[in-house]
Length: 336
Ligand SMILES: C[S@@+](CC[C@H](N)C(=O)[O-])C[C@H]1O[C@@H](n2cnc3c(N)ncnc32)[C@H](O)[C@@H]1O
Image: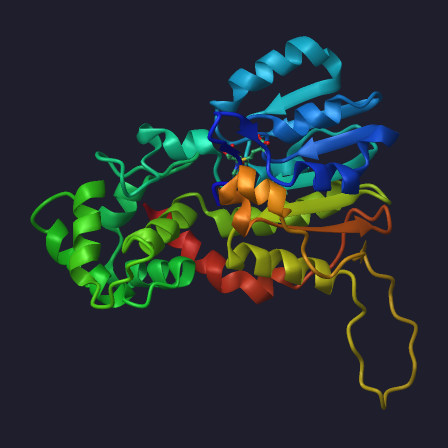
């Protein structure tokens, strides 16, 4: 996470920008969908090339301010929609030649630093964590879900080994007082037997809550499926991830749709259906030493991409079977 950051000189820093531009090749023109507009780092670069158009999405309405400035400059070449990228199949596309769909997951530096978003354990005040277009906040989650549900959230999305004690102590504490950021950090500190001196004790629980509040795993899975639908033949689907669960999902999606299913070597040879994607590179692209020194939070960034081989809109994928258990846990929030 913490994808794009403002460096020491307060310079906006879109992660892996050169690598992404070289893969999506906007110099040949075409329409690109920037699913995570943020501060517009990728979009601005694409629009520098002639004959390009960008459809940009962001769930955070704050992004509309920068989008409005770009609209003045680029007029019909640029459209901004304040929607979640899982909905990208609802864009009223008119058979545009979609040459690239890109995702830069996670949060921007501006979001992390905004105390009203309440994303960080060092913020004092209300637990929030809503990126935009949410139905509930972290405060609702912590104060309303039951012990077992909280335990699963911390385990599934934070890999928190002491999820059980933390959730038990949350339930005890909230029967006396409403839990806010400060009291949640105190509960986690008290609950953890194994102290980690390198990483803050609350890191994993806070990561889990952010993923849960924003339904990040469901967003990613449905975003990938819909992106693969709208892309045209030869178009690139590219994703920058920031934690291992996101990367695992993207890796699986690309691999499963670029490989013919293995069949028994004893079965008769059958002609297999063609695959949806061409996976040029199995390993992810990571930041150069130069980028790492200018923008240290880019260290966990991984960029994977695949090229669509056909114009098919519909295709089969088993990604929902593979990762459906995460979606089930994220759906606990639907009753809040
Ligand atoms: C890391 S920032 C992107 C920065 C951007 N690449 C740039 O160069 O400025 C991620 C952005 O994606 C947005 N975002 C995250 N999940 C989203 C979703 N499911 N739908 C739409 N926007 C999302 C966040 O609000 C944030 O602004």
